[in-house]
Length: 325
Ligand code: TYM
Image 1: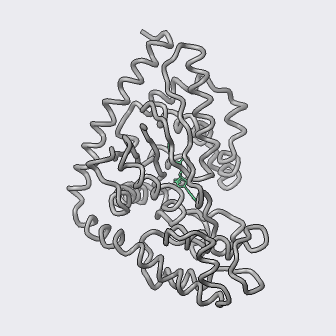
Image 2: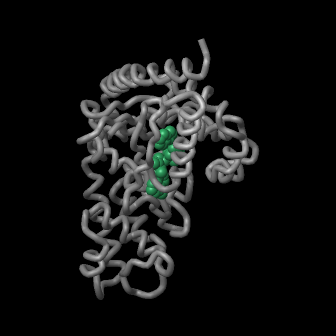
Image 3: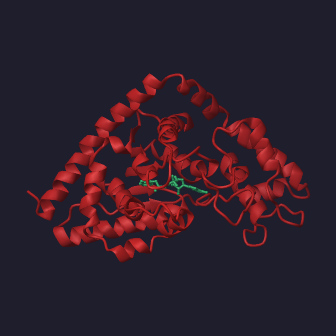
């Protein structure tokens, strides 16, 4: 399968990004043709600092490599360096209605959050994301639950394009992990863990062991004392059980049995140790890569060149089918 996905470089990556997206990417790259970008063109649709963005673009690229993406197996590149992303987005913008874009949940949420920064880029964000995906004739898009609506729109855009102009674009499908498609905040388990949210509620991929321990131990849990999975009535513990399951590879049922009769604090201590151990290798690799910027830039340059070849052929075909000469 041809796979495509990306992450916005808007802050430190967290375990929600890892468990919802990157973990799948690493598994998928073994048997598929994978393309992953650092979605920097998406990052400029919300307020940002120039210096901070530059740092985040490089940090996100390093995080991909540190987490286990292999440049021998996957194409890894920076979105803005392949100009076809913006080009196809313009073409696709003409076949989707304003009404459909207004209904996008992320647009509504972000407009509410940044009322002084509701720019046209933010509004057109889902068209750019559709372009990212459709450019590569993608079949599978591994993402977390919050991006499902955008992938659905990309499918609709592709269908409509093909109907109107003749079969040109592959219809992609989203690949959501069975467990972990929506990791919740440790401080408010009714809300999604997010880069910009409460930092105490969010474990960054490269937080120090001490900080991970502190955040897990102070995670909000529910009244009662049983360690059982029940997202409606025990949202906090259920979220921690999900995280435990994903990092350990054990089923939730198995973990419930293991901690039967034990205290919340014992469970949390064990979870903190598990996360710290699981992230130890990526933490070391990141440290090493931070000192090898030339090597990282070379990988991104190679990725750009490989991505460009694929992207160019789709744009040429789309333009021709649309009647441009
Ligand atoms: P972004 O940067 O918000 O998130 C990156 C990936 O992490 C997933 N994710 C989560 N999964 C589980 N639990 C959470 N709490 C959690 N928070 C985030 C997201 O679902 C996503 O898979 N628009 C995209 C980036 C993008 C993209 C693309 C994705 C740009 N072009 C093309 C796929 C295909 C975004 O803002 O993701």
